[in-house]
Length: 321
Image (cartoon, rainbow, N blue to C red; front, side, top):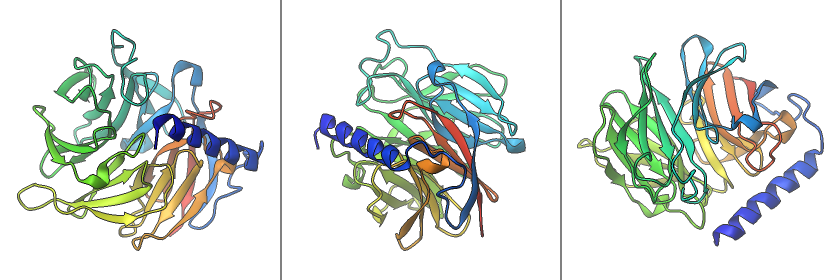
């Protein structure tokens, strides 16, 4: 699909969803089993570029968050206080050549056991695009460059091998980079990762010896086994029909997962057999949800309000077992 047409379709979907929910943002009004008690825990500052794109769990109930348009890494405390940890340099062209989006953005983030944060920065320039690292109390530094004509998006760390996996939504590639830094390797370029007009492979997670990924354009969840020699196995489509899927997280119940659908303003529960049901909607406060995390029975959903341009926020819900 043509990029402009895709964006128009996205906008139409969001407007339709907003019309259906009108001004109803009452907590938990749309939650169904197994989620309940949904509430907006934090309202972010849209004017300051606090559009949360991705999240990593931190100790003591805190969250590490990337603010895409603010080019920032921040920590959100259990009480909802926001503390900016780092702001990345703005490219000379202000990100005008960033593929697909046209603005520089901090994207995927993951946290190592020693507290080091690894995250992605996409600018459309070769001097800044790539994998970055922020050690506790330190300053952000780029440890691996990635193609400027791509859009690094999702990020996952394999603690057993020290390898970082990076999804490139424009080039349809999953890269692999040592956490110590170095030259990235194109781990998979399977056709299932490719974009169809806008953005392809997006969210990434590791589970049961496989890389799991989403494809936004195709509305799919994918699973790629990691072979014994570290190479990519055959890509398998796990779920389909998930329009506008962005990021996801496993619930802790086998391969059951929760996924955010950006344009429809929904969070869906996806079962291991690929069936899925809506568990949160705009009526629960979702504003173009971009990422989700699960800690015990608590579910965190981050909304960036990219298109609604209203209320980027953190919505918290309870996960029933």
